[in-house]
Length: 393
Image 1 (cartoon, helix red, strand yellow):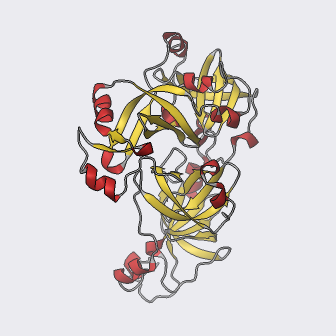
Image 2: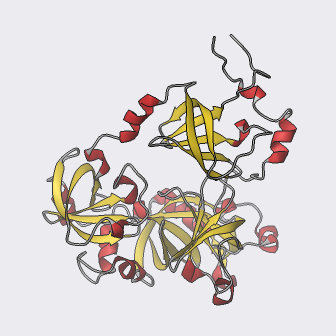
Image 3: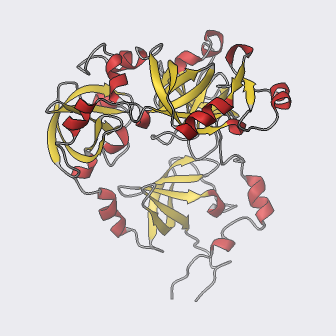
């Protein structure tokens, strides 16, 4: 007779104790919200911050004032403002400056949002949010200027108000401007920085004045010539092309005169941190056409979909209630990350034993709870060796 753990008996004695034991209070972030986190990584290009939420925060290093930056190190506390709650890399995009300044005084003056809502923008001028609502409803175009570039996309200022243009909404004709001509072999980081100061035309796809949320797109602004080139390809077609640019968020590939994008998340079934370590400009590469985006003038491409997801095969060795042993990689407010045989496991904080000591590097046994295909991990439950608190069926 086997004993199965009951989750209600593997948590602290009361729900109040469980909640009190957790430091994570913030689960949803919105644009313009001020947050504070602990710096976990500092590089010349970006700073990664642990916000105590499901995703880490990312802020470009050049945004930080020199007097602050000189004292920043791993473990330092840093306050910033949310630009985007989650980008395509699963990170929260941050800015050192609030994107649309609106303190308590401004909020009391402006009142609630609406078609005629106005709030302060940069330089103390009032921002007419009604203009953006109208532009969204009428699908009209607005003129803006790129003010910042980060891993998730571009910050674009229109009429003194900053909005976000995600990488997934950037047209290839704009990327070509960063190289003063068609995309070609060049330094990708410098190419993206060259976009700062560029004038561009955008449309509004999302506006929320209450949460200071303004999202732009460049869809529908591509020449007929480019659209015709794309029509010669079909979804699920395997093709070979040449890498002409390595950008922070993906690979730009030229295929018989048409250009396509392999997002960093579509390069490998495993997480990729630095594309430049795996690929070089001029390199030939086989890709799968996953879609034709005529509005943005590009092919959507994938490398990883050329092969089966190894995670699916690996999960066959992790049936529910199986006892598994792994090494603890990380202990956080959300739970415990465990290295299993070829995959990662995760023990949620709600199931952590109140008297169990979880330490990085420690080998422990767990029970398989279920397979999380979306996050590509095995959800775990405690493996209780004592018969106390167990229910036998």
